[in-house]
Length: 449
Image 1 (tube, rainbow, N blue to C red):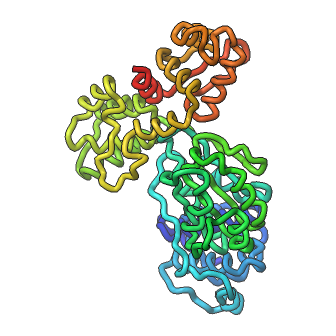
Image 2: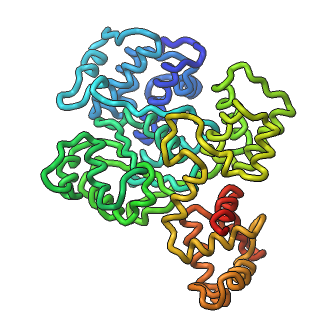
């Protein structure tokens, strides 16, 4: 194959990433593809990483059939277009295979007609993005829910996954932002509006939406679903009626549908959190330098923020007015006060870390709110027995879950865990320990006052 070494470029990465997703779609390993296109495994790996440039003609003649794209001309066309773009050229039509493939399929949206999903740069999420993409390409995975606490970065993760997978779908990917949707009855209208469907005379129903999406090959991203979980059955109805539709949902709690597959999103690793903080600080001042002492302070600041991406995004710009030492000191006293947006285009529901937690807190029934407030007194976590004693002492014998009723208390602790507000550590010998993120504990302390 006529390829050449090249530095990693955006266009090369676009081709490589798409090639990798198509290979996974076909259920092929790098070795499988290498054998069919007469290349080494190392060459396939370098093509996927963007380290080598592809030849569009060879892509059309060898890669298209090897990747089983003869029945998916929109995908074949996209692969060839990206191969040409990687070389900074217009699509060359020098072979019969390329010419035939590049004929736009009737009824298939062209590249220019789509509104592509764009995502911001992520830090430390490559493995999670890779895992989500793989799962959404599995034949039996049509609904994947990204689950995690408020502020953990589920939205940006979902956008990145959609950006990587959108070209595998003939009708692309569509993002439905649900944060400001008032209630479950507004779910279907919100989806219809995001899709640009003509507004019906009456409130659209799941059946109505199925008739519009039945033949669509699309990835539907539903962001911030937690306050609409009562509408999950309607979502399942749409999914059942649309065989080529796949859904990616972000939520703090599971949808509990039979079709649902789940992927837990956890806070960033320490190194990724540090890199994100420094990147956001340098966006404010490109010349700012971080020596070893400054990096130590950054790591401590991120630790106090539980390495939550939203918290870091909110706090890092405060360096315009405060030093790292002042930020560290402020977080030690009032962590939620300093985690406040200074950017004018920050979405309202992400304007403060307190707002993000308040949304989840407001969705809890009173008994769970009371239990979360009790948990705030435990630094470093506690066993269910310890929590039960304190909870009973604070709320009295007439509390909905008396301290003596350990089984009922454990059930409520699991309910908080399902809502991504506490973590329950599984151990073999020691008693199970319940912990909170420090930022969640700070919020629960405020709620207890």
